[in-house]
Image 1 (cartoon, helix red, strand yellow):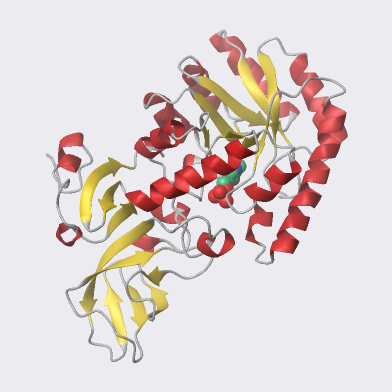
Image 2: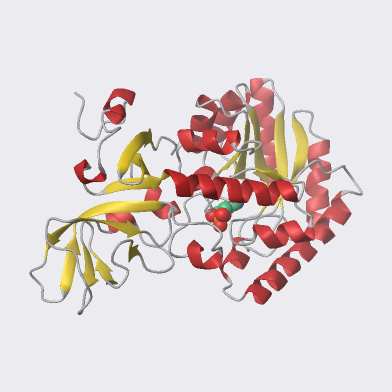
Length: 368
Ligand SMILES: Cc1ncc(COP(=O)(O)O)c(C=O)c1O
């Protein structure tokens, strides 16, 4: 049975040409012109430095949007999960990096199937990971492209010293079913420093660690790619010139957090919600909460009522303090700018693409 929430092509198409007002709430909305401006701005920045853009699609998890990124000039995509990578390949994206460790047999068996359909790459940071990848590649009778992940300050995955990175590269070189495809180094924390001098210095410190690793690794092998960076620190990594690929993701949609960190990208993602109660004096209650908007970093805002202050979420409600500000009335539909788009988009199965107040397209959010 086709339900109202179905994401088949026909069901999505029925919304095209309708006004926002018709959409059932909560609904995820994408402003097409702002999106295009964000795509162009990031692509131009990266191209101007002579580097490649490999955007992280965890921000939108949407194959239609990934295709637009490639059309705008991206060389391929970065993914966090195997499911994301499988969906991207299904959508025809050729060059796919899973910027993450694959160490279990189930994931590596999927990687082997995927590697037969696209140019797949993934990260390793341990002998265990190298051995597991080698075994899976041997079983499937193919060669995996692997990047050695380096911890350049993020304290997540990655080799901890230049020596360790070089040793992992040597180990890969000795494996007949693995090919050394470069270095993966992402230090996201530097993106969130509000003070730009501090941010630039933090990125420089991170790149100094990376430079040390590259110098040592180049003694044992050529490094064909160095991949990393996010929307908030890409500009500074590009100035330093060590990365050959930029993995930024959040620039496509921005949000109330990234708008302040990187104002050249405009918030393009909103959640449509309806005012369902004005009973509580001074407050507006909306039908979108934690499960429709998500919560990370700073606070959400209302696009058309910036004077209202976010108070708190319940699962399917949000409460906004109006004070003496102009406020929406019961039954009115309003748009929420999320505080972090990456943890909003994944809560929805479709997004409605707008020009002005009209739906011009509807896309499935299909990569998980
Ligand atoms: C490995 C990796 N690369 C790139 C990004 C993109 O960063 P941003 O969303 O700040 O653009 C992330 C974000 O989590 C990441 O984990």
